[in-house]
Image (tube, rainbow, N blue to C red):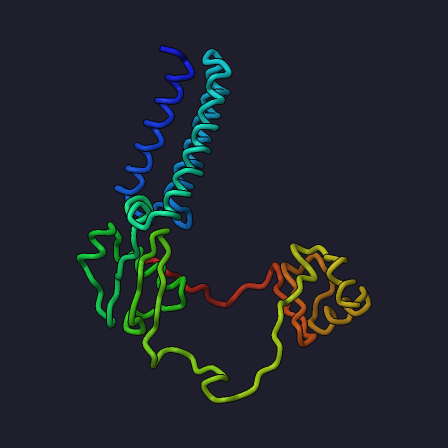
Length: 236
């Protein structure tokens, strides 16, 4: 068989097989990657690694990553254009918690354990299951959470209060090193920085893990040797 035809067939077979296996294994494997992005990343690495290790195969092995890229672009285009194809390849969101009740059948369908649920709920700031109204497992493996109304913090808008501009904090010190450009962009100098550090009892910049300048002019500091009196354990 022509080596180019052979590598084309093998690449297509591997690509399709991995898409199917990824769908079977479950969406939590994908983290925040789509199915074809996950397959493309893994297989391109495998194909190019094979080219390096098995040089006797020749330059024809470089055709495999090109075919995979075309497959990924084509698959991505089809998932954009066809809802039915997108449901088949990417999958659909699955409701895990509805009206505060865990749907065991949907968890089994998604091969999603209680440990997975609790871990992702904590990542969304929901440390108690009784706080959750709805939880939806998205097709990319992430969990979307809607808390019960009684557990949603009151916002200034709810109270008809006016607010001030927040903006983004600026990194001034990172891993013990001063980011001079950020300091200059805020019209500040080293004298101002040293004064702020002294006010916070810091004598050596290398002791600072992170320093953020907030939009209100205050400086947030996190020190390298700073340790809490007690470290909370999360193990079962």
